[in-house]
View 1 (spheres, rainbow, N blue to C red):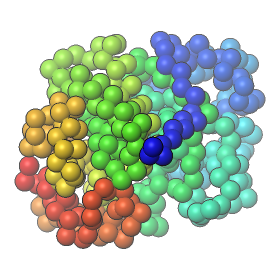
View 2 (cartoon, rainbow, N blue to C red):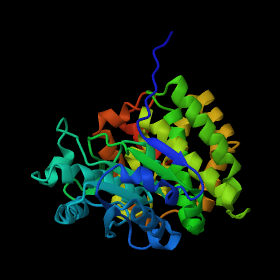
View 3 (cartoon, rainbow, N blue to C red):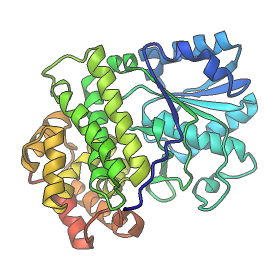
View 4 (cartoon, helix red, strand yellow):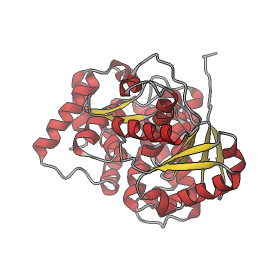
Length: 370
C-alpha cells in the first residue's frame, strides 16, 4: 500500500452566526485578544461587531490593530507586534481576507518572541512557537484559516514570500454571511485564488489520494458557483456558504501539498504591479495546466466546469481583468517572475513534471495568447 497521511490541526466551526455563538470557545484562549483586521471590510461585513459582542459576553478584553494592508509587509507585522506587546495581549484573532489572517499568524509569532527583530520572520529552523491564533475568513479565496502559511511582502527581497514557520490557527470560525458584503471584484479575485489552490494541489508532486479527494470536492463546489462569479446569478446565503466551503477545501488541500508554479510566479506580479493575488496566480494557470499530464488537466478542468484551457482563459479574463499596463512593463515583470521562480528549486519541485527556465518562460507568457 502506498504511504498516505492526513493531519488537520485547525479546529473549524461552520454555522450561522458562529462568531457570536463562540464566546465560550474564545474565552479559552486568554485574557486579552489582539483583533487584526484591514481598514474597512471588517466593519462593513459585520465581523468586528460580532467579535466585540462575543468577547464581551466571554468577559475577555480586546484591542484592535486595523492597519493591515493588502499583501501585508514585514514592517506592518512589527508595528502590530509592538502594539500587542504594549497592550499585553495573550492571543491573536485575524478577521478578514488572507491578508489579516496571514498577518495574525506572523504577529502571534513575533509577540511570542518579543526579543527578536524582523529578520526572525525568515529564520528557517528557529523556534516557531506562537500565541494562540484564531482566524475568521470574510472572503472566499485564501484558505488561510486552515493552513500554516503566512505570506508577507518583503521589501528587502523585493517580492512576496512565505515565512518558514507553519502556524496553524487553533480555531477557525466560518460563516458565509460575511461574504455577502463583498463586491464582485473581490468575489472574483478571491474565488479564483481558491480555484488556484484546488488546481495546484491536484497537479502537484506531493499530492496524495486523500489530498486529491479534498481538491476534487472543492472543484465540484466551485463549479456550482461559477455563475455567481460570472454575474449570471446573485450571491445569496447558500452560494456564499458554498464559496466559503470551496475556499476552505482549497486551503486544506494546499496545507498538505503546498502550492506550485503559478503561486511562485505570481509574487513578483503582485509586488511590482499590485495585481490582486488571486488574479495574479490564475494569470499563470493556463500554461501550468497545459504543462501537466493531459489526463490530470482534463479532469481538473471538467470538475471545475471548463471544457478546455482556452475556455478557462476566456472566463478568467471575463472575471479578472488583466493588468492595464504597457506591454513592455508587463513583459519585464513576467521576466522577473520567471527569474525569481527559477531560483527557487523547492517550489519548482512541487510540479509533477520536469521544470526548466524555458518552461517557466512559456508558462509566464501563455496567458497573453489564451
